[in-house]
Amino acid sequence: MRVLGIETSCDETGVAVYDSEQGLLGDALYSQVEMHTEYGGVVPELASRDHVRKLIPLIREVIAESGLALTDLDAVAYTAGPGLIGALMVGASTGRALALGLGVPAIGVHHMEGHLLAPMLEESPPTFPFVALLVSGGHTQLVRVDGIGEYQLLGESLDDAAGEAFDKAAKMLGLEYPGGPLIAKLAEQGDRTRFRFPRPMTDRPGLDFSFSGLKTFTLNTAHACRDAEGVIDAQTLADIAAAFEEAVVDTLSIKCRRALRDTGLKQLIIAGGVSANRRLREKLAETVAVEKASLYYARPRFCTDNGAMIAYAGCQRLLAGQQSDLTILAKPRWPMDSLPALEVN
Ligand code: KG4
Ligand code: ZN
Image 1: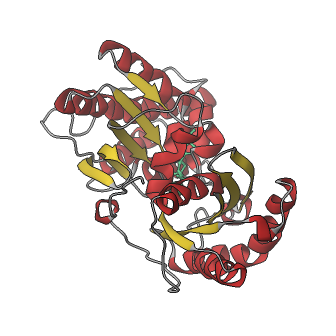
Image 2: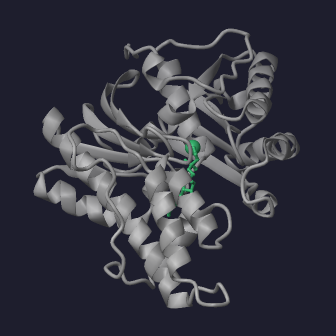
């Protein structure tokens, strides 16, 4: 089965074709980051308009690069939520209409299920059951995954998501949006031991997270380090970035270890934008080694938003006989544990 995947839930237009026999045939991404940078974050209306401009040319490009015609598609998968409603509507209406025109099924895919399954696109993927740490700009969740659609939420952030915390801390340090990759880059030059930031909620049982306090800690540390002119020297800035990154990564790692112990599972997958973070991968590699478990993640391009994960997730559900009706599905909020389980035929 050959599935076109469309992702437009936020500030990236992603398109891909996944073939259940041959794997990924093509994928392309257009990032709007530059457009939103000058506003310090995503401007929803600008995002929607840009998806309108970019989506159809991107579909044409991916179809051509895959050596296919539109009529070679067996189905269309589009991100139906969660995300920005206007942005979602662009992909959902385009995907639904394209499928109708081609006379093939369409399926609305859950964005976080897409992220969750992205490591399946790599060589030697994990097998069910496993523990998943989903860390994106909007979500931080630990989930027990027994199969596609069999999700048990183990813990989640009570306030800011990990990616959101990276972005907000970056802003406080005068870095651009999105701040995650910029903090990570800066942190490489930093001394990780000069400042010690708290590891929120690690001193009590449970698997929930809270990252909003780290924001205040970053702000206060930065404030205390400014000179008479209000300037922070470059090394200190890198040291603060390193202390912040270390605190987030250490906190995530402590909770992952706890989740592996609580569930008795021996596979940990990380997915979503923050799973591209090199320090997080490094730290979790140490954690799983101690637990005699294995760590899985997608290549960096498939950690952040992309069309391939949507094509893959949609394909798995379509193969199991699921499809969406003619409704243009777009749900800004959509709990992942409300998804139906999948029975493979
Ligand atoms: O999954 P994603 O592309 O979009 C959402 O579904 O939210 O995640 C984007 C988030 C942003 O907050 C971004 O700063 C963060 O992922 N991010 C990173 C890194 N790359 C992206 N955070 C830390 N280190 C990175 N290397
Ligand atoms: Zn995402």
